Length: 390
Image (tube, rainbow, N blue to C red; front, side, top):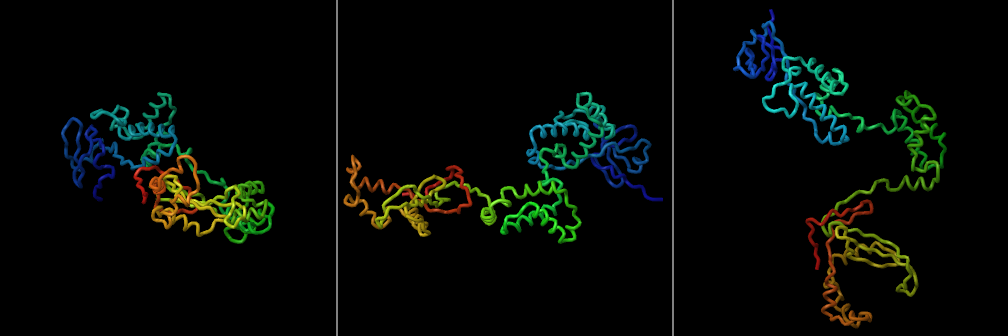
């Protein structure tokens, strides 16, 4: 005769029916189970006696809910979140007998009492919701209950609004990959027609055993796929434009947050639409090259050249980090004999006032000078400190 085994449903927190009463199991050992009631004292019952009881049955087993990420629920639309939370309250009442927010000491309603089976409680909830104007079947309540036990409140949400759709629908991935390869092969070749690309797609698929097993869709479907894949690629237009775009920079602009002066500084050049007299006596156009502090939007240095050269970057950097009093020849530049005649009170300024005006120009020590692939964003002046201002 085999030894009597304890049913898997008997555990701490389970509700069992024994001797005409439904009680909760508060302690379980290998030989005894401690049963307690809301009104009476705890009673220790031998496991053999409990299992041989005529009316013994495991009425309810505690359900450990998964800890779902609350942030996932925030990705759903507001109406979907509200409906998921609404369902959670009803499902919790089905599982535990009490809705969320119930006062301590509240007894479950009779249709959700511990003496009712889970199936009976699901039927009662379906009848309750139907009477309230929400036509719900008991099977629907059971489905929501299983989803809640598996995924938490996120399982109750309608995933259709946020469900990712395949970019090319039901099209086989092998067909998409083969057509991409055919389009890439035609980039540096002469301009091809659509019929050639469809033929080349089939040839690429037939080169491998896995590709030969793929069934090509209709020609109309293939042309729709070709239209999507060749959009903005100039596959059927100018070969020069197509090659230029294909071999150019493909990365998108990045963003670089800036907080302090001198943290990020940019150098840029632009031609000026004016004619000036150059040093060699020839009239021509010039280019303005400047260094700009992104955080303060300040122009720290600039040079005018007939043509921008790489050495201009070093000149701008030197002018940016060097205060005026430290530059060679700055005293001679302040002399009246070297300045151009001015009108009004500007010409009557003393050398000391002119020195104060020149020394008031801010300088900065650049930390980063990004390339043209970044879009910089000034993130505010909190925590800013001057970098070598004089």
